[in-house]
Image (cartoon, rainbow, N blue to C red; front, side, top):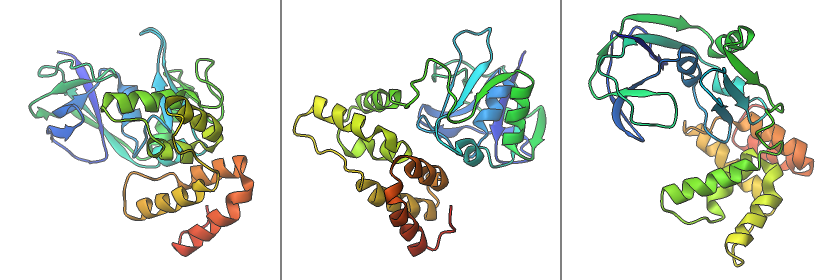
Length: 250
């Protein structure tokens, strides 16, 4: 038997029970403790960070795609649970994860009072390579334009068309991509609607509402900084939106 690791925001668990997710109803665990720590963050997706390695002999590359992204993603406590691999198997989730259809007993729990502190400790000990925004490895375009194709691939995977709407969140988090997103939309369909920079104001208002409704949108500060850097003329309107919804200044 070998150890596997599972990160959770719940403390003092004695068993891990299957939960429904994209791939089915499973308990997820990984043989890499550093991955369990990273996965125990409070939020995160392909638009906010990248996690990869080129071979099994090098440490994982953890790349912050938006300003202040990691301060948001890892601003939480968590527990890292150790379990036996007995009932786990590989369904090729895309990461080094294994799954179990049945509940598994916890062997050990390690409590992390702050996940980001632990992530930085992993980097200091060379267990991962940490790239804080705007630093990136050479394999990632400096303007994050690879995320456009990633969104197109996702739309194809879920068998939906590529429209203006499907790029709204990508544009909000990466306003520097406005011209390239528009170019791609026209390439796909010359009659496509395209974005104007003023659309960001409406999208920001939606993000505020979503965050107030406790959805997964947690990146108001990152969005504010990115738009400030790209379209500073919009910032007054952004501040007005924040004021209307009684949000603290970011």
